[in-house]
Image (cartoon, rainbow, N blue to C red; front, side, top):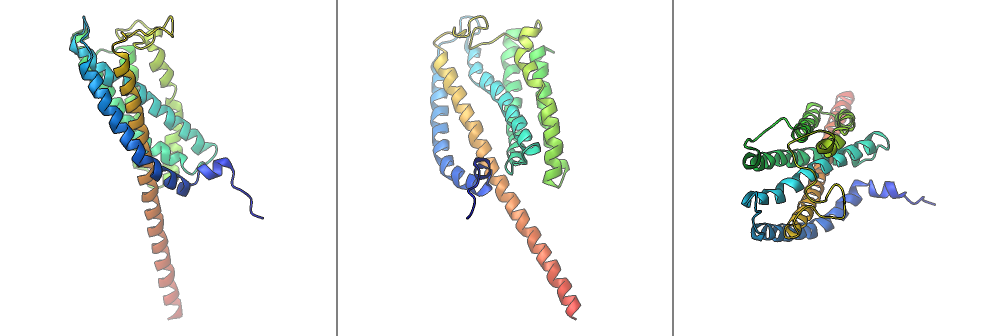
Length: 260
């Protein structure tokens, strides 16, 4: 009597993931495009701020990018735990493909923040605690990307990258609470008031645009991650097949030499 696979074994199966994601991706793509279009419409039609004027609209890209850059790194750290502790077959795939995606989000967060900072602070960059910790996050992404490129063997690269990802995760709470722990130019929480979490710090006119863009970019992150995982799984399958073909060709050649 065959034993039924456990929950983890079932969902850690690359074939199961490929079948499930193949059904989800088209619907997720349509929903992401629709929400991005709606979010951009809301962003362009909201009134200008009485102090920041039209530059306030950069917030609808900058803040979601910053949140998701941190969220992507948290996903890498969780995947790293799955890879190191439980040897989850898809964990290192998830961590590997999230690195360039998170790095792009982090880079865009820094760029949009600099553009927004120029009219507000009079300069594109200051060595502010929030900005500096975000820059460190970008360097961590770059380090992870370099590790994955440096090792040909995925298992060795996965272990080295997982250790760096877990060590670097200490930077996430530093980014989050840097505006509270230190006296910085960067403003505190823009969406929720730090003193009363149920009270929005943003004007109600900006909330629909902000949350629509946040959800849209979140779905975009998930979509890119899912598609990248599918591509990586297919790449590894092709690589494994080629290696088997090379081994079979080598075995056939050896057998032919022995018989002769």
